[in-house]
Length: 221
Image 1 (cartoon, rainbow, N blue to C red):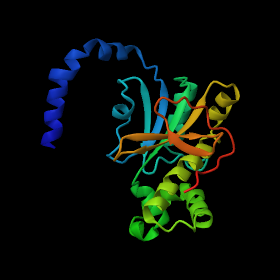
Image 2 (spheres, rainbow, N blue to C red):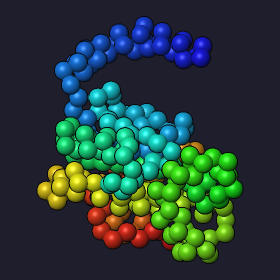
Image 3 (cartoon, rainbow, N blue to C red):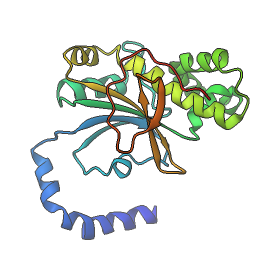
Image 4 (spheres, rainbow, N blue to C red):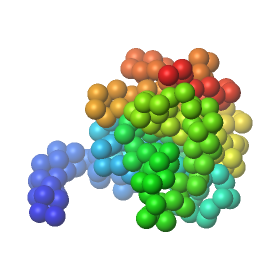
């Protein structure tokens, strides 16, 4: 806790004072560039990753960067998505998974979460991911490669869930909203984006990505 308190003092004395005009301008409202949906994992920092300032990202975080299908649960995810699209008018939504995801590890190895009933219930919204890995990736026996495939598949599954939300369906139907699937590899700093035309994830550095609306296919492992 002492580190957190010390950080607050440093923020107030050094960072806030150097960007005071920016923070004062936020009083007038927010106009974020994108809704960024990612995992609660402490190893991913959306603003640091994208080098964005306060007010530029509307962020939704939960275990496994999961987006329940519309109506499946009355929770904050649906409200956050609806507000971002219908009120804030974001033009892009990113679902960003990450390497070595504990939630995805628990999804494919239930023994890891057998004493965590709340986690088990939450991961039921990734049941399609688990089923796809079990039935379509039996040939992958290496644990790291299997987890990587799970992380990537889950991003694509959650993008499908995202399209069931009425605000998203309406905005994409007007070509006013783009959806993006990313995977962040925190041990290398690389970010991979999904190419719908090629059916695979590839490094996004210096590359422009279209909305992944095409039929999804996972990259060969």
